[in-house]
Amino acid sequence: MNAAQFGYVFDEAATMLRRHKAANAVSIVIMGLSLLILVVFLLVTINVQAVIDRAGDEMRVYVYLADGAGEAAARDIQMRLLGLPGVEEVVFVPRDEALLSFRETLGKNSDMLDALEGNPLPDAFRVKVKPEYIRSERLEEMARNVEGWSGVEEARYGERWLERGEKLVKGFYFADLFVGLIILLSVVFVIANTVRLTVISRQRSIEVARLVGATNAYVRIPFLVEGAVQGAVAAGLAVALSAIVHAVARRHLPGLLFLGGDAIAAFVFFCTILGAIVSLGAMRRLLRF
Amino acid sequence: MEQDQRIIVGVYHLSKSFGKHFGLHDVNLQVANGEFVFLVGPSGAGKSTLLRMIYMDDFPDSGQVVVGPYVSTRMKSSTIAELRRKTGIVFQDFRLLGDKTVFENVALALKAAGAGLGEIKKQVTEILMRVGLYHKRYDFPHELSGGEQQRVAIARAIANRPAVLLADEPTGNLDAVVTRSILELLFKINAGGTAVLMATHDLELVKSFGQRIIYLEGGRVVKDSEMIYVGDLRRKIDGSPVGRRAERLEGRDIRGEGEGR
Image (tube, rainbow over all chains, first blue to last red; front, top):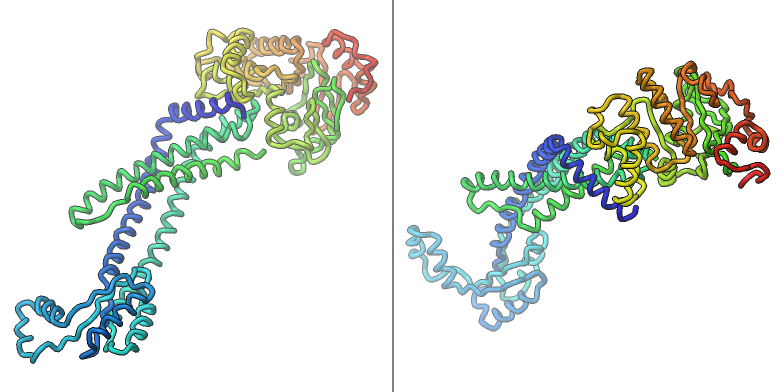
């Protein structure tokens, strides 16, 4: 294809978009609404993910020291904890401080503690673990290991909560992937059919262009550009509509996240490529040779 | 296979079947450069199928079609596009693009061939003047009469100065007066050196013109008015009416040049 032809195909694409405004508008609206479902689904996913991440971030392992372990042993344990893989931060919690915060937690029932003789709580380390290490099997292994150290009484990490949480998250990911795939396939299907209808409605133009000696590339490029433009505009429409949905939902659920700039750019790019590809696919049958 | 350079369209032992009853059976014919040939036969005789094989929209089950340097057994998508640029094609239903003006319809062929904008403007203007439609260049096809639409289609077909023009029942949708004018236009184009192969079911219409007529019936060539025996190229070029016609049109003696490539 020479430079002149290259110019003509883009001219042709612009002419097609201009002269078939209504048909293009209908396609874009159909595609935009289908994509809206996908965007809303993505929003639900990222928001649930954010909740899961936050829960994980607050998760700590508590290593309780044996009574009278001594300062040297405590320092030694702290160093060893810091040397464990996945450990991000180790904070010493003196027993007095622990009692104080326990008292705060109990609030007005805190007078119960007055019945105790002295402080029953041990000194402890509060260990922050990297998110990728927050798995029950890893934490259990760590706890078992640490419990074997001298001067350590016990290591706890909220195992019952973690196991239940993990099951929930796993279930969510599975359902999310499954539903996501179905939605993606349906959206691709709707877009492919919409573009196919556009292509079929121009079958005559394609035939004529081939008759007068247009190469396949010459015939394809305007449709490719048209499909890409439709995809991009439909993606923009879907993002705009989902922003409205998000704004309404946020009134009831403050702190609800929206797609970031990068994600929006990636989504629009994805839809642009999708539009171009389904457009090419739809034409394959019409361009036999 | 290579064929004699003076033959623009050669069909050799072409067979194509569509089910039991339709198709082409061992069809042989040649059209020389600058020749005008009518391909006559009743509906279903295989005229359109044969033309489609010649512009390579479909391919034979056996046998070969050779158009200039293009051989049906060696075509790819890009060479088909090339062939179409060197072959004008006209149909009964005009096949104009309804969303493009007369000018744009004709320009399409030149754009597809990669001509520059200046050249396109000059060439389209010239051709539209030749077919008498320059004043309607901004009209859309639906604003034109049938005859005018066919003129636009012919203008588009000859835009790239093809060596051969294939016309499939180009007057099938037109009344007698318009038919006559379209035929005159085709003769005028032929006089400029373009070979024309026109398919029609109307023997009465064409027999008065004294051009070569090939009769097709039931997918077979049953008669050729100039009695050319296909396959015998030497005889055809050196002594047959086709040879003489080609000679006359080219304005020079082509005899004794051997068998070509």
